[in-house]
Length: 111
Image 1: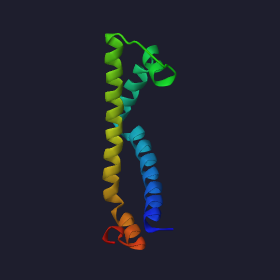
Image 2: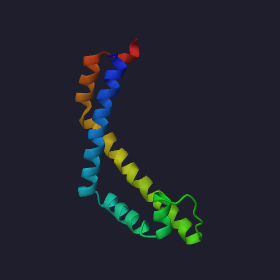
Image 3: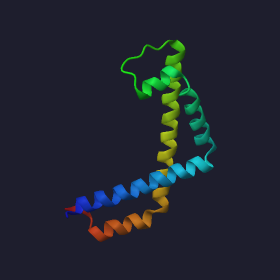
């Protein structure tokens, strides 16, 4: 197996763990994440917004529904940003393990 494939597999596995750990951490400890999650669930109680994300081929939204959809997308974006922040900070704590991976397969960017 080539070095790039080894790196891709290792990093993909690592990022899946980081994402899972991050979501678990945010669900338990982040008030901001919990508020976003609650607000997103509340917005999805609107039938048309829920249909938009599930089974509708075409929808016509009124002004209020359009604003709700925008708010939902903003809330989801905030939740994604919090997940990325967790992953970024986790990278600092896992630096040595990641460096060891690069050392084991060699420095792929010098070839």
